[in-house]
Length: 484
View: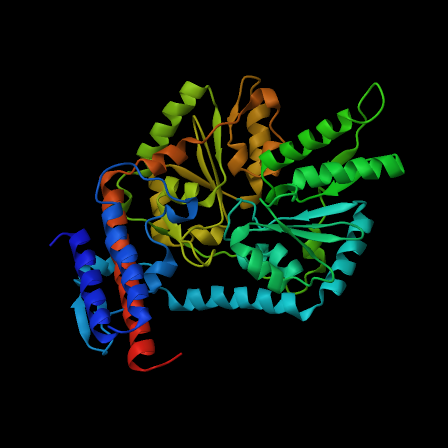
């Protein structure tokens, strides 16, 4: 039996069991639908060799959350509590590699602490403290995104600043605080949750994508126009350069410039300016008592039987593309890019993904990994990186190393994807020395090798089995036990 057939068989058997036990129940149709789509379709999805594109947080073999949802014994149970189908242990051994109860509990505990801290202080008090700090820093507006310095959608607890400030903990959203108002932009996935979590007396929900709801750049451009007309001075927009995409800063400046063109006068005035408050603490951090520490969980080596390509071969391929682009350095900021490039994974930095906090650069004579030394402390990880010719450097050295590389030669150019890199990295690179293009790892991840495709098939088998198990347990709880 093939792997895909195995999942399909499990789904079909589970569906039949549910149907027999709940023939007259509306639940039967729901169970059949979910089991069929999760197990059958998932297993078939990767049965071909066609390059597959996934969201960036799903490109790392198998997420810890999916893996941990699988039964330890690799057994699916039917709604009567008996064994329905025993999945061969080797087929599901992949899931066990991502299990770490202690680390998982610590991460979840940190998330819960952030949520508890967010609810402990009223919206009025937090915003009053924010505005006090904004005034001390000389800014009229402060923008708080969901992101960490690597522009991740799912972030470590220490970077859940927007969640702490707003008490809304969805994975996507941007808060904006002015001297007399506060706004939260989020997408349609979270309209309901945000409506329930926000204190409507102090926060306005901006349902992005809806008619008459401006984008943040448009909103700020209009606000800057009004502010300049009233006060004859630019609107000061505060932001942390490390947690905003370089492309976002560019969009803001373009919006301000376009709005200024409509002002009276021969020369468009400067109606707004971005202030990154360099050398000062992030404004949310300055009011957040008990903010969690940054994670320092160690990397682990991702075996070749799953990676399918050595670090050295990946570096060689990237350097070849750098030569074509005439780039002397390439900078990698996204955490999934770094995990892929160095064949490492990490448990505990991010709740839902096996990735670790780090940056990386490749030049013609050096491959550098920027991270906390504790992350490379395990002997096998250290040896793995040493064999690949990787130099480990302090996490905070990334910006100064980019500057040093540029100053070392007038013809040096840096390849950096502005859409996947923070503003602090991009702004130190002169426009003439910047190659703003999709980085080479993105395409390499999309075009899977044989080992990666097999790993994805295995991962979908595990996911399909886990979903079938869940639906069977749900059926037992509702149909057999009568729980509601």
